[in-house]
Length: 414
Image (cartoon, rainbow, N blue to C red; front, side):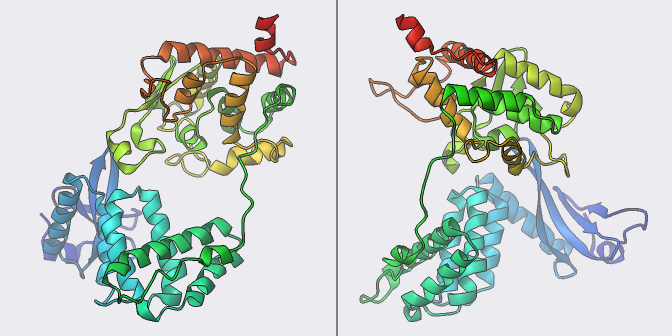
């Protein structure tokens, strides 16, 4: 274990970007060339390595750092995210006791954060820190006027973020709901009715081409795409596999069994609640032969790394969401077809053109559905049918790309 004297005398050699001194139990002190010294705890979750900041030396000495590590380790053992717990505690420590909006928000955040995903917690924290605390954070809950809150939310609208404005208002509403049980009897949730004063957004589905001839034109354009090989491959796989863009971007080589033609997406990566992410089954995606061939062609390029589609700037991150979107616009189809819209394209044409089993389609889409008898659809039990279906779809896409538009439903009837 590191002593205070060792920490005080530690330096970073000039030829190194950083120097790390191990303490114990995954705890280490990181020294920068400039002389700053920070404590980190390294831990693993879901076979991945993470690290958690525990403060700077000398403000936090070795003894306190080890104590903070033990507390974080206890949170992790209990199933909580230690980074989010520490963030909540840090917010709470910076607030005096009282019924200010900030104090109530910190209390509510700390109570809710163990049940949230990391992305939702980060977004909610941003709503508070960036948009609500600067305007009403220091005010007592009883002194906040509805129009003050509305002004804070409308500032978000002025940035052009209509959906973000609604999320900020919803965050404020949740804080008021948390406070109401301890509020004076005459007070109410002042956020009620404010949504009607926000700029309405015309909602629509993700753009998706569902007309076979036009979809065939899109496929020909994709196959003629002259951009980078990773974006080109992602463009080709998106319509074939019709999975969520985030899952396709973050596809890992370890998730693929190309000999068995299977892609197994861990539950933690799926669009599920925190509880379902931790306890749910993985989503198994059958791969048509065309998809296997595309993936095999990528192995010489990215097979030595983690991600099938690594980012251009950093191979430690997947391809950006904007890469395929920009490519669709470059091909002239950006307004007609979104990356996410390939799910709707496949679903519509599988039913209308190929007369495919809707339950198998929903299983491939990772939608929770029940059959006519009320039983949850078993994705593994019907894997053979799903293999047949994805191959039928991939072959149909090839026909559309070749300009051969055949409605198999009408063909069967004939």
